[in-house]
Length: 91
Image 1 (cartoon, rainbow, N blue to C red):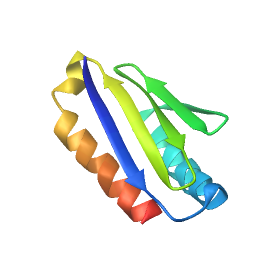
Image 2 (cartoon, rainbow, N blue to C red):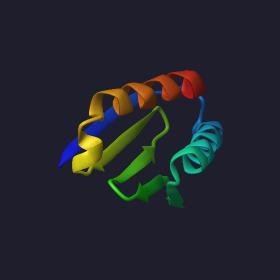
Image 3 (cartoon, rainbow, N blue to C red):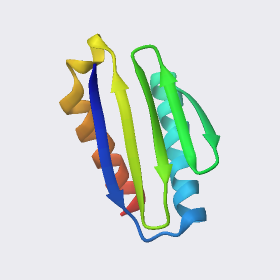
Image 4 (spheres, rainbow, N blue to C red):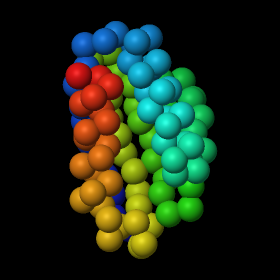
């Protein structure tokens, strides 16, 4: 199983970063039919072929995801899109 592990710094503070991640999760949920749920400071997301979490810390976020066989062939573009959205929303 292929995996994604991205650490992205932010200076937004927890509340503002959480709001930005909520917006991202909502868009991803609509676009890719993800199920998303906060448990503490971790946003869990999944759908067929992907299972992951985004952990929110005071100065960074950590995105970890396991990709199934079909999505593992697209790991590069998926990771690039995640990085682009994080840079756009979190600076």
